[in-house]
Length: 496
Image (cartoon, rainbow, N blue to C red; front, top):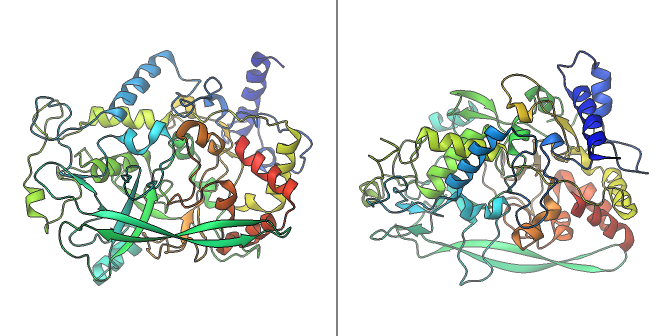
């Protein structure tokens, strides 16, 4: 089939997938979005996980850095300007480059791109001498007052910051200031045996701190390691209708399938209201504006319209940090990153395209897909969604049939993966279902295959074997497969 015919056919499917389409009934839409039961061949349009936005041109190290393919020529200009700001290296204030000063004083990276390497996945330090760029530790304390408890219950705040170190440990500081400390990771081995006798050694991490620059942590300090997530497809995830996500929640496991996905609400600074959370390892933010602005302030220490403090995550227990010069007075006026700069970063983040699937018709891939579905992995890694088709959604992102393999819900993943640190209404054992689209391109783009929230898994097999809690049955289904079927399931994941 020619590309032209493919697009025509796809356009038809998108109309069918759109809830606003008069031609489509609710039953037809449900049929299109339901997990398939036919694994004899690839489904229509399955090779384009991002619908018409899908990147079908680059499958090299730049595969995650391509714009929505259906974007207009004019919009591409904004995308590439946003790319420039995403890569911008911020510098210490005051400097002669007034458009880029204001770094820190405490920070984890000097640019967005430093954590989101090639717009892809971060990784843990390779050894004791390696830096932790693209991975950091969230820190907080349990709520201390009734007001704090109520604010969390009302979805107004996610956490109570650690009194001295704030919401995350910044391991770098500008000259003249002490960094907050360094994360130390130690691994112990844990062996898992497949049903056919083959063994795999998992590495169980433990975390501690060294070189704390501002005294001891609070005695009840909680911390959670996080690697940077891939950036592809964020705009499409944002465009899924809230009611579609809520329709799949089952907090009490009423259907008895062992899966009890729960949603989460949180205050949006961008929209000034409580909204459904979609982004972050524990659903920390509801919109791309909130997520990006939060990272700009917390990771780089740059003030912006949603986080106006010039000193990032500095606290009142770090007075010299609060007194450091701010990067204001330049093009950003009273902010270090102006609304114009942030808008371009939002646009860029919203339009990073998901790469096309590879080998969707390969027999081993189809067999792996069948096993993935049989193991009930799709209960959380929901294969298909449709994006909204209203005027509030960017034209390029509207009415797309997409294949992110996530339900955007929280699930209890068991003690093995638990960080013991609640975040908003998410418990210390809950994590958002990670989207799987693009996961098979990780090694090509980022040069590694470290997965899960802290990169402990060194490949997809280990990532599956770390699944516990609600995912234990699916994990066991994989563990008890024979070798050819395990290889087939991995081949399917690598095709995503």
